[in-house]
Length: 100
Image (cartoon, rainbow, N blue to C red):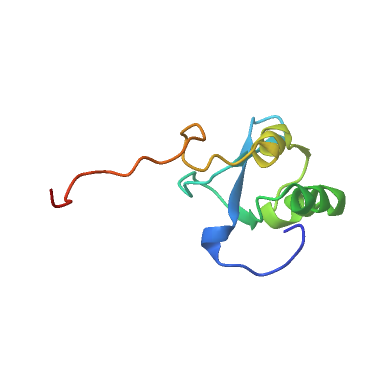
């Protein structure tokens, strides 16, 4: 949406708009691609997100009118991506399956 470059779906972040009934919508990241409703894809990159906000691309892509809150999406995009969930430490070679 932001940079308008093509990429495989596995590299993109799906975004869904959740309405509160009063004409306000909240953008939610959907990395598992399971939330209901119309979704739009963007690169999980802060630069791509900023460009989408500046171009007002979320409203057009998700076909919504009204106030769009993108706070939760901004937190998700700006957060560092965990690699393994483990603290950085050297790997210890396993002795399983090695001849003695």
